[in-house]
Length: 279
Length: 312
Image (cartoon, rainbow over all chains, first blue to last red; front, side, top):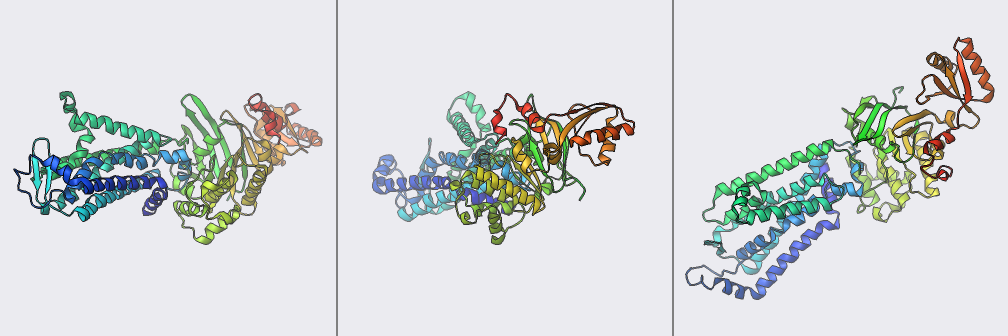
């Protein structure tokens, strides 16, 4: 099994397109960092006008923790697109290249092959998140240092003390790993039905866009739907920045996402095992 | 090793309402180069894909190396190598990397020596480090065959291996198939839509049309020009077949007519055969020359494709 996974990883990381995502994330993070470095004080002054008088804050508010939060909030909505680029290509791309039929005439069971492909996709997803974590957290801290984290929410302002933040980020990235794996699993599942990767990529993104809109619209009809949409749970990482952390909804969201992953994976194996390979 | 390598019984596959393969039965023996002939869309690829369990049949049995494909897929594929249709490979890998990846997937870990010897077999030694995207059609086809052979399989399945090749490539492919069979003792199942190609490499052949078996027999008997193919209508074909087989005649299966035998014999043998049957109390209803195989094959494909295609 390990050999199969390493072959799939080899195939993923030998392709130039894999690195597009890494470059894209790198570019965005560096741009945000540059912007804050050049003009951060003004940005902060504008946002904080009313607050600086009423709060007693330790150190500079413009610190690595805050920038990491801004980056996460902006970027985690777009990372799914980069994940689908690879996950949606896993089976459909091989069908399109014509290599799927060769792959399946090798003495490897379809379930194992699919599992290896899925795990390789997850490794890619995690690698992308580690890269993002490194850039957004480590580099931000290096450039701007640490301090208290001040978060503006719709109804309240949360101030987290500087030494109470790092573990929250660890949790947030772990949660993001589950959330992004859910996206990967969906794209992977759709990838089995298609013979080129555009279909699964576009349909995964469409599902996410439609669900996200449903999740964020505050209309009673949609509110009833919300708990059943995985996009509602994908942003659950923000719960880790409440004080104190509301563990129950965070964990519940994580479990719901994990169930999604398992269901998508089992459905993939079921469909793939019965599929006639005509590509 | 008397067990057939491939034994297919009543294989049937429908796609929606179209019957792609219809109650097809055939047997491939060890060391045969078995030619699988039919026009495009006759069901060749579908059958070969079913033999590799890429497609699942609606019903019918396939035994390979004496094992049921339904239950022993992995064991069978371990000893089978195949190139199905276009030889598509990972464009971003080199020839060497391609063989390395697929040797691992085949359950062996080929060392450098083994990989280089495979590349030598197909004449790609000097392109070992070249990326597949830079390869010509013929080179890809040869690399595809090297991939199929990397784990030293007993059975090699090649689907239209000369498609898209230039005349030199076609000649190379022919020699490679003969080499596989004669020097390396492999059983080869090769499909084509060109009679001339099958004729030059195969020992036995099967013609299919619309998914049904039309003719099966040895290429020698079917194609040797010194022999005439005669159709004999008989009252008791079963016993006649027994007697003639015993006397050393090679009998083809006649499609769709159970009281008819088809055999390839020299002209002067016609009375001998007739006498043999009569002496054994079998009533001979008629003996007449059958169409030549080429005429027959062309008649199957007439009107659908240009006749010239079968003559080069």
